[in-house]
Length: 207
Image (cartoon, rainbow, N blue to C red; front, side):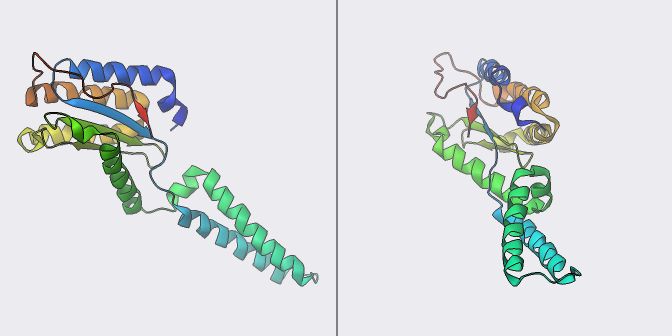
């Protein structure tokens, strides 16, 4: 999944238009946030560094010709650095070395933090909805404030949220379609009032 497709101006405009269309029929305030990465996962980089160092040490021990001891120290340390940087640069390998549970927890915590930091809790009717996508983890979370009756919406809300989560792995276009599908559900749950005021920005937030 290319990050460029999620972060270019064309997609940002498309998300903005989706949010405006959703909010034209509901009092809910929708904010879309795209984050490049929700966690650091340095332990994965260190693990690859250790494996590279181990390989260098085995090379030193098994090499048929005698080598200076100083070379072994430099070789092991340099291999660790190269391995760690290799893991950091190759997101596919890094993601493979991190458990799904750790990825889920990182995205969940980051989404909740964004919900508070962006002031989504400050709407008059507590009707803010954060749609949060984390690109490295290929995961999404939807956080709704207390004014959104998610319990009453039941399976429809659950299915819509699930579709957004799935769309984060399919790509930017699929996400835009899933985001727009929230409109009818939110319009039914929180109808737009005649004096409704747009309290939160419609522009996609890059975290």
